[in-house]
Length: 452
Image (cartoon, rainbow, N blue to C red; front, side, top):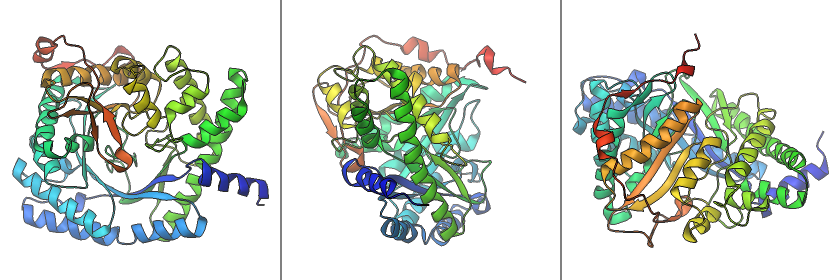
C-alpha cells in the first residue's frame, strides 16, 4: 500500500536532491554477427542493434513521463568486439567502430560500450589488433566507448598490456587534441572487470550474459548528502544506518524502473547497479557527502575512512532493495564529474596519491583524472599498474580513466561539458618508472587467488 509520506519524500528527492536513474543500458550479444568479411559484419551489427534496441529510447522516455522519475541516459552495451571479429586488421576494427557509432546515432542513445578486449592473461591476435585500433576508433566516432581488462585476481597483471595501453592513451590524447583530448574520456583500463556494468565508458555485454538484457544504474549522491545533513552530529553506527536506509530507497526506485523497462521491452532484467554516480551539478557530489560527515575538505585526513563507511553502507542498504545487484555498485569518485572533487583538487586538498588510497575502499578507481599533456607513456603505465594492483590484491574491480590533456599543464583545466564536466590538471611525481615498465611479462596472481 502506498504511503503518502513515502510519495512526498520521493518527490522531494527528485525535485530538490538530484535523484535520478543515471542509465538504462540494454546489453546485446553480437556473436551471431561474427564473420571474416568486414563489410558483412558491419552490416550485421548495425542491423541487429537498430532492430533489437529500436524502442529503448522511447520506452525510457515513456517510463520517465509516467513515473515522474528522471532517466538521464539510454545506452547500449555489446559483446567485446575483439570476440566478434574474424581475421581483422586494426583498420577493419575501425570500420566496425564506425558501424557501432552509426547504430548509436540511429537509436538516439548517448553512448555505446563494448569496443573492448579481455587480455588479463595474454593477447589473442584479434585483441591486439583491436587495442591498436582504439586511438583511431575513438578519434573518428562520437559515441563509441572502449575498455580493456589487463588484470584479474586469478590471472595477475599483464604488464605487456599495461605498457601497450600507455601508448594507446597517449595516441588517443593526441588524435583528439583539438577537443580537449576527449577520446581518453571514453577509454577505461580495468582489473577484474564486471560483465554487467551499465555505466560508461566501461560497459560491455559479458560472455556469460543472455542474448539481450536490461541493466539499470541508479544515482543519488545528493539524496545521501541531505540524509547525512539531517542526521546531524550522530555517532558512526547511526550515520551508517541512515545511509543504509537511504540507499535502500534509491535502489528500490532503480528496481522499479528496471522491472518496468524489462517488461515493456520484452527483454530479461539483469541487474541494478547501485553506485552513487555524481554529476558536476552543485549538491550532487560524493565529496560533499564525505564533507557532510565532518571533513573540512575531501582529501584531508580521514577521507578514506569516511569513504569506506559510505561505500559499505550503500552496498548493505542497496542489496536488500533489489533481487539482482551487480555492475560496480558503490561510490564513484570521478574528479571531473563531481563538483566537490573538482573543488578539492583545485585547492590542493585532493592529490592523485590520496585518490589512489581512496580507491582501495570504493568503486572503480582513478576516474576522469586529467594530467599534463606531456606526461610520458611510461608514467601513465605506472599510474595504471599502481591502480590495477589494488584491484588484483583486494579481489575487487579497479580501473583507470586518465586524460593526458594535450598542450596543457598543472594549473590549467579541461572542459568536456555535460555529465563529463571539467577537470583541473593534476600534478604527478617527476620520478620515472620507465625501467620498471620495460621489464614486461606478467605479474603473478596473488597467493589468495588459489581458492579451488
